[in-house]
Length: 110
Length: 112
Image (cartoon, one colour):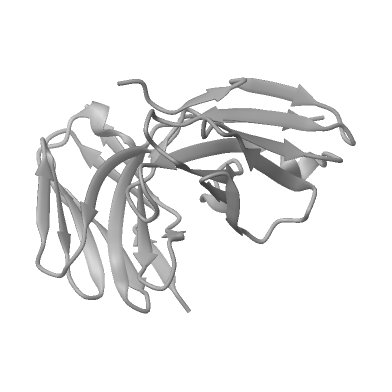
């Protein structure tokens, strides 16, 4: 069964304290892995798409990496405005549905 | 370029009533997806429309239905509202099937 697990559920960091969020997945043939950011009460904002193991993408303080079993979202020297829930989703080759993780709630304290 | 838009932003209904939610995709996008996100929970897939046809639906009862219009905008209808239908309803669009989904701001539905 296709499945996505995100950890930790919540992460509290001090401003400037770098860390990583994890997205573990099992899927029968990966078409793509997606990272989104969601602020409370708003729609998810697209961050990255990764397609194959070894691929990396960066945007400002965020860097996403992909292996055959998991993806990491690394956040370097975070700021309070990086506080949000980060969602991971995978798409199987067999269909076009996204399978979503439950998200990691990131809180950056000034 | 305008993003995905949804209306209304908030909707308050009572049990048993019907709700209609609307979504306009990004210009040039032909696929529209609907999701339900109950408070504190993850995204649950509701419906997928592409080129005016329903392509797939999630594990929701038939009182959740919708359609896609010739201009690719979409409507989600929820009949016989129940308290547990209270949630943020999100619409997403893609330029082509299987590509990155871009989300709208959502409609917050409250059922009293």
